[in-house]
Length: 68
Image (tube, rainbow, N blue to C red; front, side, top):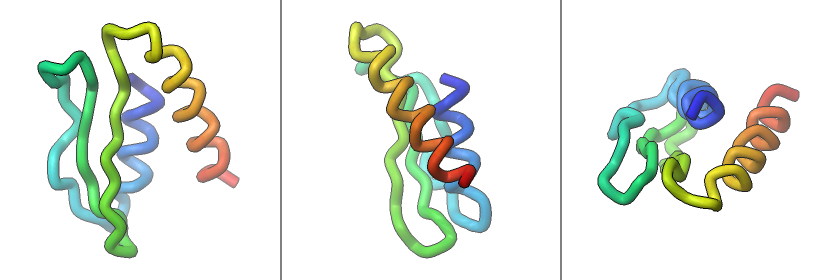
């Protein structure tokens, strides 16, 4: 979930948080933010699924790209 929080926080800088990151009934940690350029993002992390590890790896790659 930390990776999702990092992505969400980076996108929220200068933007608008529409739905803060939270645990949802469909076993996901999820939030919605509009970035400083007006692009809406839905950030999520699957919490009870075998796909959670793969999704985490994708988020980490996104953070690395955003950091460069």
